[in-house]
Length: 123
Image (cartoon, rainbow, N blue to C red; front, side, top):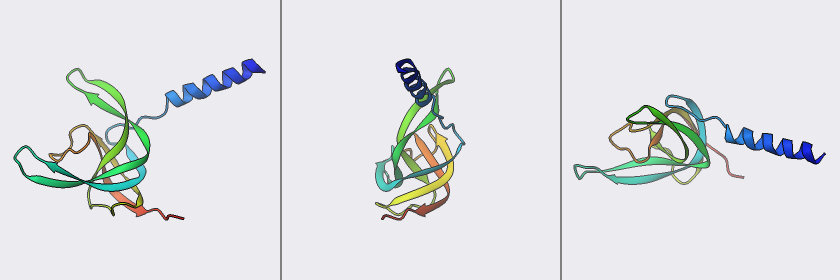
């Protein structure tokens, strides 16, 4: 019985270690709370971008130059591309994931280009 329990625990741990990692272009639905982040660009201008602070981190596979090596990274903040979402409330966004340098306003290394979104009711 003890061997069976240990084997089950080991298999669960292996499954968690091999959780899906999203790649550039993946369709995703993510939950979190949006916030605004102000960036000062290289030319001195200031830009405010929306960032989704995820309720739970996701795994994203990023390409690490110059040798085309891939790196799996745990992501807890994602830049929102599109219409700015409401701030400070729980929301769900569906869209396409982008990893790496995707815009001149790069707040974080990963973004979601939003196709649709919705506010999550708080009970």
